[in-house]
Amino acid sequence: MAEPLLSIKGVHAGYGDVPVLWGVDLAIERGEIACLVGSNGAGKTTLMRTISGLVRATAGSIAFDGAELAAAEPDAVLAAGIAHVPEGRRLFSAMSIRDNLLMGAYLRRDGAAAVEADLKKMYAMFPILAQRQEQDAGTLSGGEQQMCAIARGLMGAPKMLLIDELSLGLAPAVVDQLCDALRALNREGLTLLVVEQDVATALEIAKHAFVMDTGRITRSGESAALANDPAIREAYLGSL
Ligand code: ATP
Image (tube, rainbow, N blue to C red):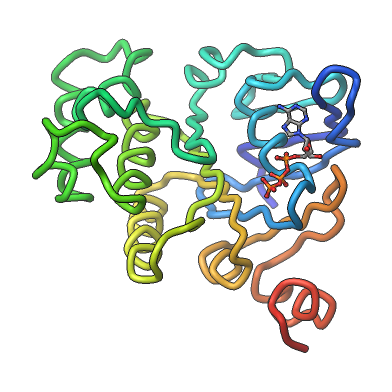
């Protein structure tokens, strides 16, 4: 494999004295969609938060596009090119959709015209956001909020987007629409790491999959191979 865009080695992290990640190793290729799956409480969200600097790694390395980010603050991680769509979306519900999207661009230094051009791209990708751009984000449906959260992440012009729980609570048609949008973004060169509780959806969209269990990556490989693995099928796909 070529030099990975994101290479995580031996990462430990937790909350206070409680360790959650116990030596995570994971590598994401430039230009791929990868997924992270695993049972509740396995540490997926904690790993995403550790990559984006919200939780401090206590050991190990997080190398991204030539830079070491294990000790970086969230702003520096975003400036390095990683944007995070958090679990629960965390939109500013009393702010307009347009202002939420502009919040995603707050670190950019490439000028108002470039930001405005990207805003237009977001509206083209998710036309409902264009129609409702002056409406408060809190008035959106769950699926529309996820679109807004993804678009807000993209407004930071990242090289890589982390999405925590893409489909949770959303109708299948909305999930299909989101997956199509992610595939289109990926064709344009965006690298994605998606945490997804629906393992079938995750394996369908991703080239590589990582399975997490009690703070470690316990399985990884091509999604197609994992989808045919009897142990994965039994544990996550409800069939053998
Ligand atoms: P889920 O799919 O249920 O969100 P997850 O794989 O994303 O699970 P995490 O949310 O990373 O798992 O949680 C891993 C462990 O860390 C759990 O035992 C959880 O209780 C604990 N944990 C998560 N957030 C905190 C926090 N803010 N403070 C203390 N412990 C936490």
